[in-house]
Picture 1 (cartoon, rainbow, N blue to C red):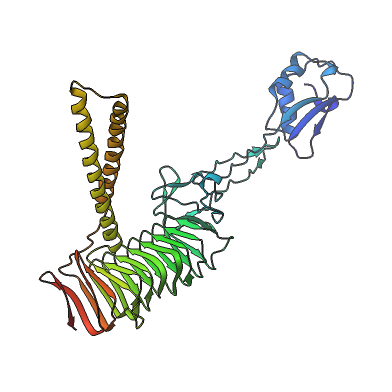
Picture 2 (picture 1 turned 180 degrees about the horizontal axis):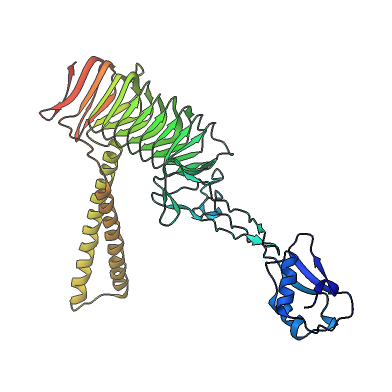
Length: 456
């Protein structure tokens, strides 16, 4: 039996992950067996990662040129792979140049739809331990799982490891939670830093909206300050704590109620009610339900409501013309009158054009025939008739699009708790009356085809 310590030295790496053998004296490898080498390695505490090819070379292909020869190699640990989260929803607030309506469109609010994918989670991959050449376990780095959790208005589906939005709203990451807020808040006046706002949920502005800005929401809008000549549109309710000073340019449109401090020189439209805490001045207001102006006056402009209009006073001591329309949209009523007049004019023109055409057609069939000028006139007549008929079709289309009646004039009421001044135009459906004197504590309604003014 060959004593390998007499011929070889073992070179072990500092981290005990590799071992090589070195020949240090003349030796021809005679009588060297595989078992001898294995026993020698074991006696030197080498039990893992032994390279069988190296042993074969020592036994069968011994040559001094082989040395130093690596005889063992440890197994490196395979670290775990951390979990990942990939946000697949749109988070870009940059606004395309083509989408800008004016210079106040400075950014967009990236929004989520109901059941829209927010993010997909990849589970961590477990690692494997390593071993040095002595068989000692080398630990691997444990993988870390994603700590994100579903927060407000967010659901996590374990089947596809995906976060989903439960409402329309804006993504918000707070700590290790994913939230979707259906209310967008601005804690200052609108300015060029905020720009115009368009959001799928509700909007709260804890400041003022200066002239020229647009605020649009599919939900509600609550503005704690003053609105100037701006455009406000909500699918739900609009609440403005102070009021609107519209300078004849500002407008508010709501799919629900409008609750506001005061209205001055603005255009207001509500699908339900308009509730004003002070006065309505020189404005155009339309509510399919009620207009309440409990503590103030309605002075100038046009107010149209489907059911009732209530105010302390209507008109003023200066006899400023004020229009009140109940059961009818006054603006649409005026448009209807204009379109009907235009329709009558066009029908008269068509009648005249047809008369001319019939006269020319008769002459063409006669023995005289048409002169060259008359043939040109006939072509012009046909062209003019086509243009006029197209105009008539357009007017008919506009008439059909109008929504003049917004309530039942038979049930409509105007309630004035203090004073109804002269020069107030009252419109109940097709019935009209203008006040010519001062009334106090009255209600106005339609009875037997006449507009009556009675005491409360």
